[in-house]
Image (spheres, helix red, strand yellow):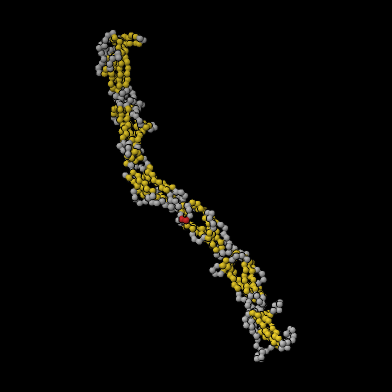
Length: 548
């Protein structure tokens, strides 16, 4: 009969017999041998050695052992077999889902993971397995455990075999994570709305409560790749693109795909210069009104123009805001310009260089004068003309040349002057003239005239009265004596100065200076009188009479 002392803690044994009657002992436990006649070991006597000490037995090392007894009665050795088992069980934690281990030997599990503990002992056999979660007291493990709450866990496990061999604690730390990461796109560099320059940088970052594994991205229809460094638009062709990405945490939780559609604009604006304003060529010479302006415009393929700068004759660059007046610049002018779009693409300074020969500056309008061609006279402060008097307007411009002249009489509509004109209506008139040269400089002229279209009134007087009347050709004719004299006179409403002419019976006109006399007896006369005032207004009258 073998016996051994029990010691230590719960579930500890030093001798174990399995179902096949194999005997297992602990190699470190003292074993005493007893001899008795009862099967149950009652009244057994402890055997002692030859040295009379009776010390317990120990087995050296792990493995099968034998005790041999020489039975002299039967004449052979009797062997007693046992197994010295000093090796504890080995426990393992198994996870039903894939895990990820970080640098601190922490496992990451997705939500709802099941942890199963397996243990085995090759010799005396497994007795029990014990588990502690997050520092709680150990309890016997009986079935797999579901971890469905997010958080950090520390699980400790050990197993005991049927001899009481206890393994060292197996500790596993793991994180249960059921929430996917959240990723963010940031754009550094020149950006306008969703248009990026070729100098922009796209950066992807992601956060997760328990750690991000990686971010994968693709541009357009390419394959997904692991994001490792910022994406430079310098390496992306100009045009529209779509960036697609998602993040994965350490347990495989995958974020929904995100997209960002953008346009890479690497093209600077195009700049155009133009001299605008009034100019006119006479031969090989160009004239300008002095209102000529430099106009600079730019167009851009996508982002839009932000600013334009210009330089005149190699001067400093100035921001262009409105057309530039060039009245102070003479001779040849060099223009340099560049433009910047809304993502700061800049056309090269001086890449657009234009040379313009500046025209001769003409800032004065034509010189205007007028001439009255025909009857006229000045009375007090009024120049009087007749209805036949032609009014000439003369314009002269020694630079750009005369373009046109317009005039108005009193408040009438303007009329373009093309030939001398007359005013036939009586009265006082204000004539306003405007002259334009070929670069639209203008000048003004105004003058007043009085127009008289009333003819003088004719008077005639016979020195004697008619002594009788006769009828000839149904006309009544006065008859005068031969010594009769005829006096002529006229009255004018304005000038008081008239010219009187007459002729007799279709003879040559004679200027009236003296009375008409020495008329022939027996003759019938027709006296034609013509009176003209200083402005050419004329009155004519005929008289029939007879001398007897």
